[in-house]
Length: 336
Image (cartoon, rainbow, N blue to C red):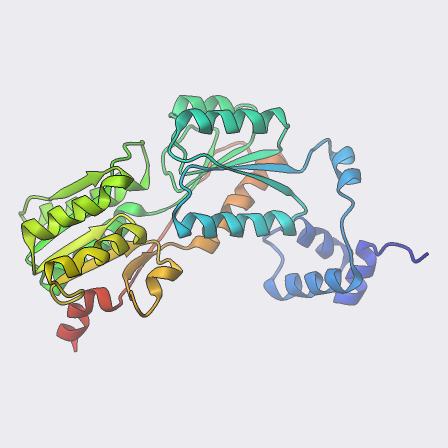
């Protein structure tokens, strides 16, 4: 019977050191992309798999990672979770994913179950729990909060600069010349949540123009009705900053009821730059978050805490970028 391939075998085939192979297995960011790909290719060719049980016994770790997700119907979050899962797989970690919806009790229950499984760490995506509850959790389990920029000192934060993103969306519509610019988002008053901060960025731009901001905040089931209210009240020559792409697509879906044309009569900007929003049939102007970077940094931060490399908190705010498309075509026409 042939012996199982080792890290030395992988290193020889990939043309790197055994230490480099070990770093790739742990998904260490210090390894270049070229060497990372060479090692992964060699691992696949040789059929190399790390001995997780032996590593767990040696390190006294389970290699389990708990991922708790409070938003389930947004493609941005599903893509983010998939990227985190891929990082876990590369690092030979075992992710457990709990989608809990907008329910604080279910979120708390999922976290409790994960801690009972002795997970090595937790990634909480758009968490609903108050800061004091998260502090208790992070006191015994390494924790990273994703897409939330407020948290206790013992938990790391990875998020987008949502205020700047909200400002960019509003300013883009103002520059296009829409006479009224409003905000449509979720009624989700969680401290540090993107729903609060994107609206704040919008309001700053409108207030600086000497105008009164107009914000429509609704539960998810009330978004379409709110879109009809906005279009019925303001009609043509209106710009709408939407909290995310899914809200923007709902607004686009009711434009025809009012005889309005996307981009010329009504300008719409989403947030997340999802694949569905980029489809030619929708062509939605959107604020892009660095999804891959968010996932990578969340895993780096969590690994640092699990391995005891640091105890001080890291708070990473990533810049966003406006991606113009046909839903604000008036900008393109005027600039041309």
